[in-house]
Length: 189
Image (cartoon, rainbow, N blue to C red; front, top):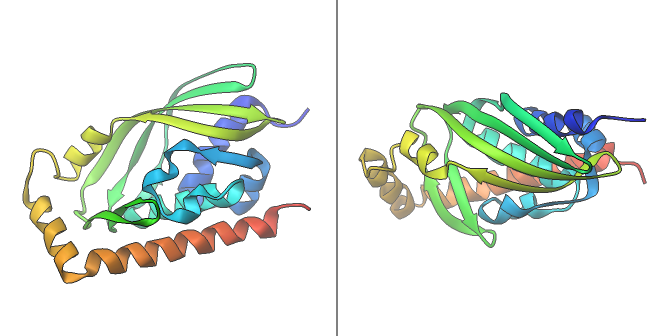
């Protein structure tokens, strides 16, 4: 019978938190698409497990001790709704991209994050094939010191002007590509 819808959904977030390529192959469909990858490195838009592994590398580059405790989960047929919290410590640059190029880099603040999210997952063959999310991004940015405008805003300006933001964006995009490449080691065919 294979993995349950609930296990596949929980597995997806375990992959994001850990980078487990074997688990990615088990829970992510080869046709997987992520609607939310538009603000991530280009590798995060790759189909299948590669894109999920790249997304995890991107998030873990910004947040250590990353976890996704589930607070609620429901499913109906091939659709799963999972409510969770994204938690971690902001110890690396949190880089946002637009069409694969640097949009903004938030320098590490050392602060704890705890952000509520709801994810809508679609399954095919008992694997996650599509991902969409409703996240409290303003709350997260507030935890990072962006809203209301604080000292972090000046750090962002300094990072962009000094070239550190571009350097961080390139380094993180490369890490995401390396993570995506590990998917090929765990995919059959």
